[in-house]
Amino acid sequence: MTDTTPQCATFGLPSDTGGRDIGIFMPMANGGWIISKNSPRLDGSYDYNLKVARLADEMGLDFIMAMAKFRGYGGEIEQWKVSLDSPLMMAGLAQATSRVKVWATVHTLLQNPAVTAKMIATLDQISHGRAGLNVVTGAYKGEFAQMGAWPEGVDHDERYVLATEWIQGIKALWTEESVTRHGKYFQLDDCQSFPKPQTRPFLVCAGTSGAGVRFTAEEMDALFLAGNNLDELIANTRKAKDGALALGHAIRAYSMMILVIADTDAEAEAMVESYREGLDEGALHGMMRAYGFLDSEIGKENDFTRKARSALMAPHVAGSPATVLEKLSEIFEKTALDGLMVIFPEYLSMLPVFAAEILPVLRERFPGRVMEAASA
Image (cartoon, rainbow, N blue to C red; front, side, top):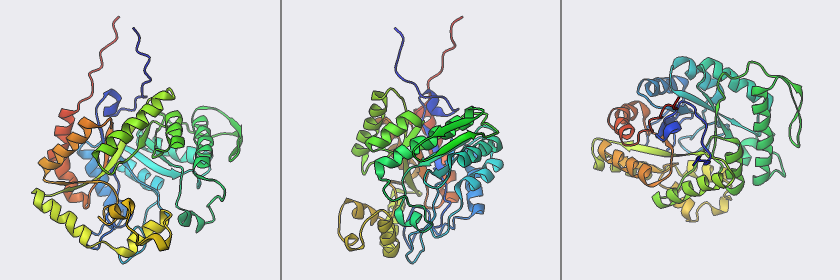
């Protein structure tokens, strides 16, 4: 009997055949993903990111990805005050690497689809087919209002209507000689875009609402999702992938994780506690305002504030290399995740340890299937 289950497209990734994709969330903004006065002071510079990218490339990571950010959160540490342009930085890193995939972020509210099509086609040429596009459909109002780019009246679900027009226009420009489309948000009239990508760039977003899963299933290759604990991550991953299958599509599911690695579990936990003790309240308040919390609500305790007060801006795993390995293995064993995008408090010291002591074992434990040759 023929298997009619939808299959993901192939992109030269371990997940093409059932393995796990492991990538790096690049530290392209100062402070990284820890809002603490006690965490390493990542400067967000190109030189630092260049060193990280070269390590990722040399040590066998599958992808590197950079967010796009236009306003920081303030505080004593001035969290994310300095940030690099995502596609420009990734173009430079593509030139400096040879095998790792390079995924840039673009906000649908900021860039015309024809401009984005050419940007990512250029990244594809620089990288010789390793390009990817992280599509961000939402925004933090203050960040976009400061430049007159906040569309009043375009609510959460409507932003996916806009994003669908946007990405469909880009896909058409990547493949067709001329594109004419008259949508609600974008107008393309005999629009041409050359060169075309030699390989269709990998498309990823973080939409996990009902509208987000539909958009991801119909237009993207993968989505990022999270959970406050392992049970939530299991449920959220399964719900998103099942939702996509119900729409007739298969998608990859990724999550991101901060890895705090030290010689011993006790040392790693002490580092986490130090970050928590050094929480920058001003930066926390700035982040919460950006997420839409009113100033009067910031002091109230809820799930969001309790998690934020850890000073870690994403879920984390802490411990010795052996402990981190076992915890990541458990995540892969119990969830339907196809990969992880990892973050480090300090990349240049922790990434080599991860690549030497953890990554090879993950590759062994979660190998891709051997593809059988078609019979003659």
